Length: 65
Image 1 (tube, helix red, strand yellow):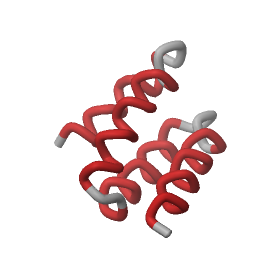
Image 2 (cartoon, rainbow, N blue to C red):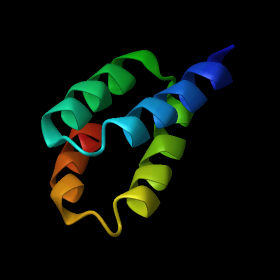
Image 3 (cartoon, rainbow, N blue to C red):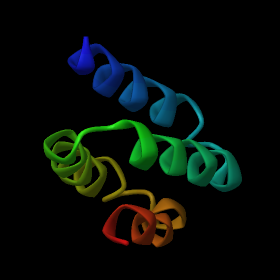
Image 4 (cartoon, helix red, strand yellow):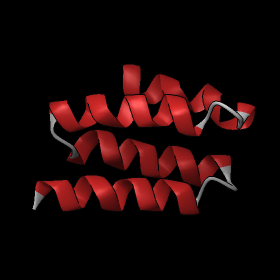
């Protein structure tokens, strides 16, 4: 079931990526809900996903805290 939460989190982040504030809000939820190894996977995915979205790269500090 945990994998479903991880996949759902990625889906939600993709959908709200048009709005930085929503993206930050959902990213904070993800940090609370995901397991440590899932958070590591999310960091890698975020590096790839935000590579061409500079407005979202500044949000990555949330997962490194």
